[in-house]
Image 1 (cartoon, one colour):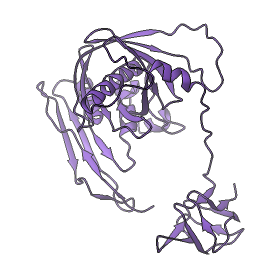
Image 2 (cartoon, rainbow, N blue to C red; image 1 turned 120 degrees about the vertical axis):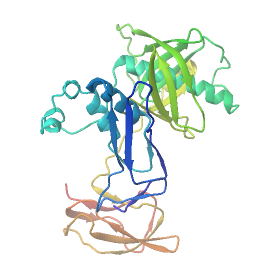
Image 3 (cartoon, rainbow, N blue to C red; image 1 turned 180 degrees about the vertical axis):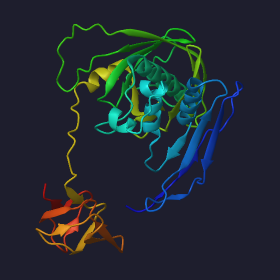
Length: 338
């Protein structure tokens, strides 16, 4: 894979009034090139408290929540999850800590039901503020934007876990998590959704800044909210979890239950055309054994010849496309033997 450019980078290196400090040792800035060949480290983040380990962990978690990195993959979510781990908090950190607690690898931060309630409460509030600030129309199939109106927030996109959010007064927000009954599962459920009350004591939000500062139940917390795409989905980062959210009206959510979730097609055993173009040549044949990074073929697009390389080691099962043929984006070119 080629080196990746860092288009946006924002760290938190502020000191707290209680003597806790954050130190950021970093040699990158927006536009820096991050290469995997030498040292892909973005920075070292250090949390300090003059009092105890728990405060150091708390201030370090807060710094990670405010650490904004775009354009490249990174491990901040994993680090946040480690800081939430009970054994780590207690100081039980042997050299095989990762092997013990992540035997199958890291699969993402798992938020509790109340943490999800906090997330959707802030997501709904920010969505309302954004619409007012940008003078956007109300949510589809509703004109009621008054205080006390209910909206639906789906965590994980349109087909994710849905919650009803209702602002009862200036600070108190009621959240009810709904059972996931989409994709044809419309049977009545005997489970009564539990209601959570989130006290949003304070919130600071600037549409030009991805960091949303809040005080929830007297505790300061930070969220990162990225701009929504043309389908209304926006990404929220909270407590190390990165989730896609969409805010809908109740009627819109009811109608969405008739939509089928698109099937995810596994293309991990194929090399696909990255863009429309013409297949100029192959560097491999059926049955060839190839290594990671080896040249597979050349695709000409926009008067430029692009070398496509293998992203894995394996055996070529079949070359699907014909040399000289026109390729569509994501068209299968080569298949690996699985």
